[in-house]
Image (cartoon, rainbow, N blue to C red; front, side):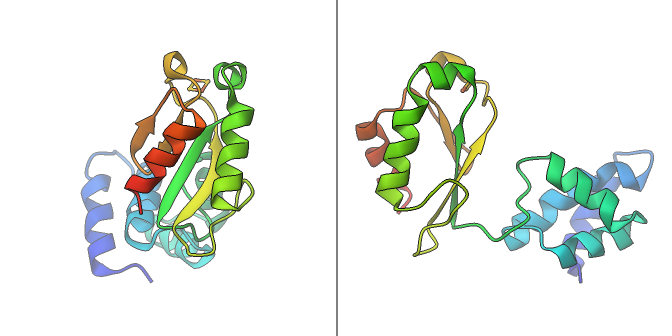
Length: 154
Ligand code: FES
């Protein structure tokens, strides 16, 4: 069930659209902000609230890669795997992250601190290879720089 606070926040977004269904991405973001991810049950609750089908809401959630449909760690690392980052050393960065965190892509560390995901171009090609940790963009990544960055999130 959506909480009163979630409903109030979603309604605030709905005011900016001619139809409440247009606020579906905002509704997903609201739920994710409160719960960390959007469960199947939350998809259904959002669908009921916006008078949509769960499939319609799910297709938006799946398409929009910043909506997490499974539980994630306290911090989410989004590693760019598009062309500029590939050219500039994506594989080394990916392998270092996997080794350092002892997880594979798509997984969460045992302590629940970090989830490692890939994402298409972050729009920071001039600073490739790049990644986001939560809302922070980090570029020109090297193994040493990654170690320093991750320390800040512990
Ligand atoms: S290709 Fe990685 S930021 Fe654009």
